[in-house]
Image (cartoon, rainbow, N blue to C red; front, side, top):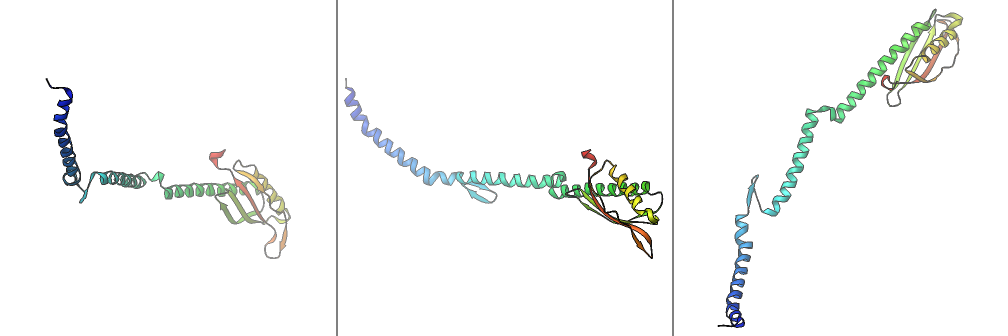
Length: 193
């Protein structure tokens, strides 16, 4: 019988030669043969496996961007332009309802005389309404009519932080006694009540 040492000596050289030959063949396959078979045609471009992962991440980013653009078109409630228009519409509704309430208060407050309005200015971000006008045809009671109008206006639930006008009466040869006014107040939005 042969000893283990002689068996190993006899097979060592063939195993070593086989290992070197296998290594050389694998290296040739890795660098010359496999790249030829591992190239993929994607979107008209040839990509190897290393480039496929970056192409996949870029494609996912493009799909996400396209989906968000689609959602902006299909679901306009998320679009900033739509939200700005919606806010402007809500502010317009608040402005119109406040002007209507001011005019109604003027009608309630006048037993004699006329309250004329020159301007209604509404600052939407601060929810502040500024009103200018004049009390006419009330004779010497024009300041009393103006005070009654302001008191009626302050009692409204939508009015807060009233900056009262100065109560002055002027005599004009053309229009008679009158009391011009300018006042402002904060509008309480109906949803805040």
